[in-house]
Image 1 (cartoon, rainbow, N blue to C red):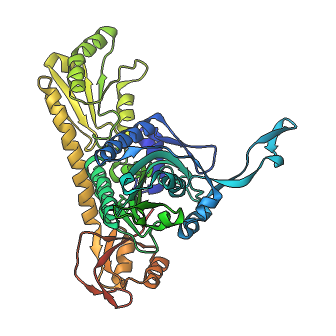
Image 2: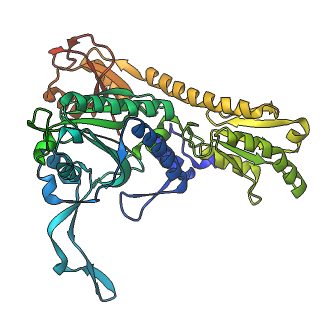
Image 3: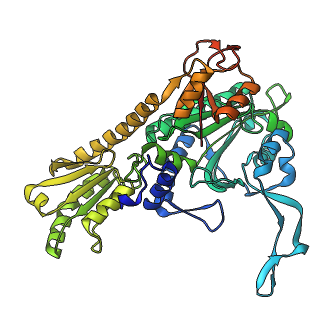
Length: 488
């Protein structure tokens, strides 16, 4: 099975698609730019969603749901917002079809009085609701999260990374003070950082976007940026401080304790199924998908090896107490006792699907009281005693999780450079990876770098080298180095 996966060094883009195909994560849809998320991919998303949902609720947020369709007039209320999304909106103009000559066509008499926009993001529809929910300081804060799908009419798509329809969560909060809203924005950024590093085993840089890169309608956009194996950056999550822009656009005010009416302060924040693409490109290899144990739908697969029913029965009997002990310890285990596939085929399938640990049990293992344990992250096997094996496997899962993070972090460090001149920067960017360099803070310089090198400022890091210097392009003063990279 592994031979059906292109080597990363030969064609990284095809390798990425091959990994998705062989791991049975997703298929292309008949609708251009959309995807069918298969059970393996959706169970991975469910695990991500479950962890994040718990983290959101631990920080006081509640789930709600808002309409998929948004009146066109709503998007016109916030000028920057409509400008940012105008070219990506799918528009509904009619409400029904009619039969014609054995087919269907749009019924011209069903044209809507006002067109509807298929949700590209929900700020406008949610803030229309908040106007009715918020009257007093007692109604604040409102801490709402929504799990939903959105549509953005992308012209160039790639499975998980950029599709016309995708799944995500979007948080929308309302606060009495600017300080509370800023604290919320940074708190959710930290939630995303924690999730990326501790569960996805994907190291990230936290920072704030430049004015040209921030979310449409935001005062500030914060982000987590990760580095993929091909040297390109991936924006993995964003948290936006919206100021009072949407409150003013939808006239959302509250009466404070002194009886004064004020506009509320807002945030929004989100991550999407793009995280699955990031997970693939951070950890996977030429043999297929590699999954961090904390998110893997199946953490351990047990493959009995037998030639007849008697050997099969002995293997299953031998495996049963181990399966029970692992499950009791919270480990997800699959027993692959399918008769119509040979062990070698099963090994290749589970390898391609990224199962962290594979255990083989054959007649000799039973005779000697052993297990053959293979770890996916290093493609290595060990023979261990059956006695105490559950503890060994549980600890090995933790070792794999840590190893994946440390390997990705080391790769990022090896592919991170600091440029002291524009000529030096061009050479570094061409090689790929993260490049830190001084920037004078102007959009003119930012645009020039993008046009000449195809690199963008991924973020102005929140933590890092605070030493002032001179812009590598203009020579003007620079407060600190910013992070550049080519990106997805």
